[in-house]
Length: 350
Ligand SMILES: [Zn+2]
Ligand SMILES: [Zn+2]
Ligand SMILES: [Zn+2]
Image (cartoon, rainbow, N blue to C red; front, side):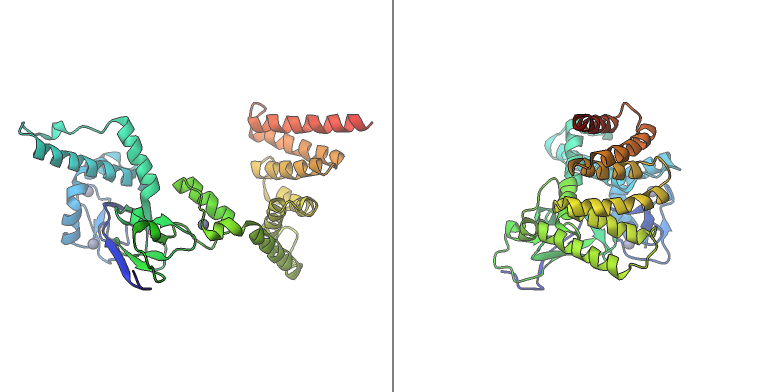
């Protein structure tokens, strides 16, 4: 049993990396702000608040340091640096294993890179288990891999929360949790202030699973109805906005998408059509965004049997797609099939 507000676990990262954008503001080891950071004399990339942190980071930094020095002026991305640290940690363990299990002469040359399939599974492990380490404003400042908190599953209605202080993570109970076995505790991996479709897509893309929490299971359509009515209210409220005002176009776009999700085809087409003039003006000629919008509207017109209008819209989309994608591209083939369907239906009528 954990009471609301109780500390359930505290953990230090197995590996962690400070985001490059923070490198001049925060200590690369403890992630705390420091006015007078001292940089590593050898690579000049990582910076520490003092000798204590520099020493604590040295066992792992001593291996990556020459790599950073060599790659300059190119700075490896944050995820590449994190991946490098995972490999270094693994090799350290390999070294310890060898020390414990063998009496043969031990040199650094004994250490070899793990085989490709192991590297690949490390990469998978990194993608799924990486925590975004946040500052007090909940803004990401780095990433880390923690062994125990990674075992907590996701829910969009979590009963626990991961809070960071520097690089240390604290898992606290948001509600009373009667059963504190890991599979009964949930934290949220994503921002809950997103419609369920976006949350599901993000979880699928980043963590390879489909959320089955109560919020995700029963609110899809209600959410779209809600979004649509809010868009409509705002479009009316701000009806004095210029036709090409970007925020007005975003509202129209959102209303267009909501209608499609709600299968309100006719209303959707009205909103879609209203986006075309601003799209033509705001996007440079032949850019994919404009062509794709035309394609979407054209398909809807075709579906609603406004075939002659669909033909015009799709032809305009085709001109752009031919330029931006080329005629060999799949999208151009899809478009050609739709055009053929238009011609077929129009010829059938006459
Ligand atoms: Zn520090
Ligand atoms: Zn260094
Ligand atoms: Zn969910």
